[in-house]
Amino acid sequence: MYRCCIFDLDGTVINSIYALNRTINLMLERLGYAPVDEEHTKIFVGDGYKKFVERALIYSGDRQLSRLDKALQVYEEVFPKNCLYRIEAYEGMKELLEYLKGRGIKIAVLTNKAHAQAVENIETVYGKGFFDLITGERQGLKRKPDPAGALYTAKTLGVKPEECLYLGDTNTDMKTGIAAGMDTVGVTWGFRDRKELEAFKPRYIVDAPWEIRGILESV
Image 1: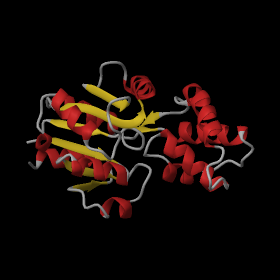
Image 2: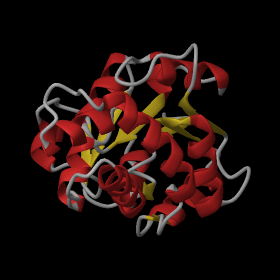
Image 3: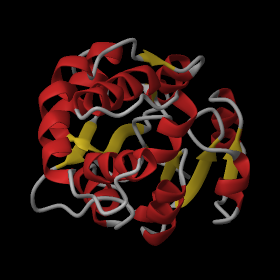
């Protein structure tokens, strides 16, 4: 029986592609580079903002990352002003989360996004206090795919790893959930495709939030 569902943020519970694409393009513009499209943005994200910036710079031609320090400085300046741009819940996600809460299943978010912005994103879309726990990138806690954050979430919420479903849309999430000893669910509505998720052999792969109800009702 599952007592907790731990969700990735970007590409899983919130569609933030417009905000991420806007932010990275503002940074690139400031440095004199051409914008990147949303499809490339989906590939660049998932491992924290520093890796996001690095990938965008390399794609733009700075293969030696000679302008990384400046790029990070600009990104840190523009991201807080744009992190809420057109963010929204994925279709069916609010209904799923309400269903989980109604069944007494704890719900949490674990993300490599900076903690303050993660909280702001979640509270903007779902309201304050909706999730039992939100954990973003912060000092003293290793970022995904290290399982530390997932295990911290389980411990804080008083559940065992084997009582958790870990849900995400990228290879980073698949590595995280599996390393934490949690039944891992790949979701295909986010930033990566089914082929990437299948390569890591998660317990489940779903195409829509309502399918998670089926998993919970079958165990």
